Image (cartoon, rainbow, N blue to C red; front, side):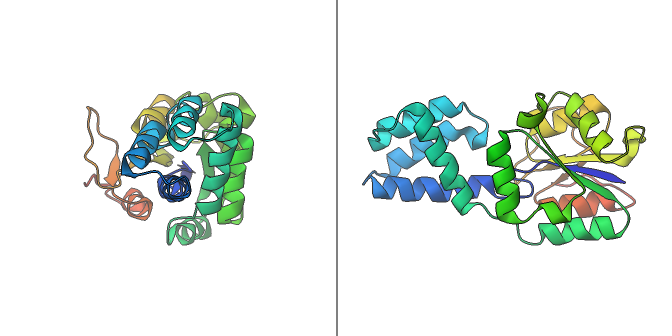
Amino acid sequence: MIWLFDLDNTLVGRAEAFGAWASAAVADARGDGDDLAAIVAADEGGHGSKEALARVIVDRLGWDDDLPAAIERFRAGILEHVRAYEGVLFSLDVLRDAGHRVAVVTNGTSAQQRGKVARCGIEPHVDAIVVSGEEGVAKPDPRIVEIALERLGAADADRRRVWMVGDAAHADVAVGRAAGTRTAWVSHGQAWDGPDRPDVVAPTTREAIALAASPQGAVVD
């Protein structure tokens, strides 16, 4: 089998890292719970406009930074706090030890996403890393899946033996479907809200891997 994994909130706790940084930044600025809630909402789980998020941070916390500087400031904060999910690197090792090929397929800038990979020690546990900011194409465009498969030496692989695993329905599940792969959605306890449920739904990445690797490939909440 071939496994393509999203990075943020799939292999690493990006939401937790942003929340930890935002809490500290609000406390340092002597802000309150409303400021923190507004900043977290503007982040949109990492999928919102970085400029819009920076504007909210600057306004709420009274920073003197311009927007590009504010963006770099909160990105640095995320890197400081980001961690791999417990046990997930071991799960990647188990897949590779069984002869499976594993890649990270992530949207984002090269510096930020490579920084998370380095911070969390992910590179030794995978066979390839594909970052949208380096390739000029991003999920849900299926071309990024084709790039990943080429890097793995599996351009001609049967797509029914390829899993795209991630937490973002609009990016990870969508790109898998567009590329013809099987899809595993990491729900973090949320219910699937839409038609055409993924092949696997599980609350954590490790559980998604276990289900996808099982003979049944069942769908559970």
